Length: 495
Picture (tube, helix red, strand yellow):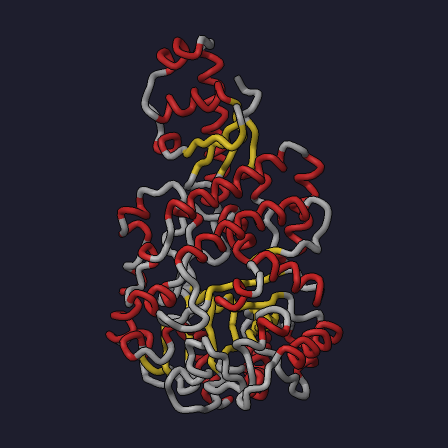
């Protein structure tokens, strides 16, 4: 009788006579030769060892040994998932986004947030409200892992950012049971307010700067209120801030039709940011604009861009063999993290409204920043008594909790389900649904995962190159990916 684990195997060919054996639940993957792949394929289909031995003209004992080895490796990986976590039994908020500014000094043409206002009054979040918000979350949750300062433009309200960082630092000193959350911000970096560098260094704030590329493509859509392009000032400030703080470590670009017209792809943008600013991580997202918008990208162009991203994956892996200064796209890091995730399942495309929330400048709570200002997703106000226990909060939250992969047949039966992520906010803005499965090109996504696994498998054939890749990737990600060393194994000669 085959175990459930063995039935889950996904087997595919990546080179002549070379195969990958992938276990979706634990993300263990193996290189295998043709006979090994045939044996395991037959075993997953329910054939007996006797039948397989006869068909393959191989001793039954050797086949039994191969299967026992594979099951042992999967079980060993599973045991790392079963180890008790320090956070076991605790209520955790993964990310809290504070909209410290409901205003922006720029007027980007594609801004879904309506120049930073989300269709509401321009205002800044007061320090008192921000601290009340933080206190409320720490009253309800045992831990908040990260706090993102957002807007609008968050640097318009540096005083509140400082107040939150100082308050939480004092809170941690008084309450040893909690840990200081990671602080981050996404900023257009069109100006550097007095005290910013000191603040970043003191509280180790991670910074992502927004820039769409070289001047011609950036200034086509990103400009100040008066219409002047922003590139020159932002580029200058990125260099100034990097010199003083080592931040930003990532640049976020919104990809538009203008990029395509000027010959840019996501990977070319990543290369540009590496050469121009020595920043090696780029997050490139398609502009979320209505039909007919000048920046809209067609479905055919979107497919072409996805192919470019797969080529960029191969290039990143090759470069990371020798250097941690390889231009990479954030999607590459995201997939590596999911591949090495130390849990058996990842049942959400996104945890918005489940373990992460956003609070706007007025104190209103939403599932994430993409839903701010949309009345049907307002979960309550942080100043309301019992906001987390209110029927409104639970009604909105349950809509996101129910939006699981396991509740959607096409996702539930997909071998790549634990590596698939997506944005409910983008889905809602495009199709008025939070079901990410409606926006995912499943065939293309599965092909992209096979593409990634194939390149990792080829790299793993060289132990020295594999070691260098892990070290350089860990350095670039600022987050260790050690479990991949267990997730990757070999069965190529076990026949």
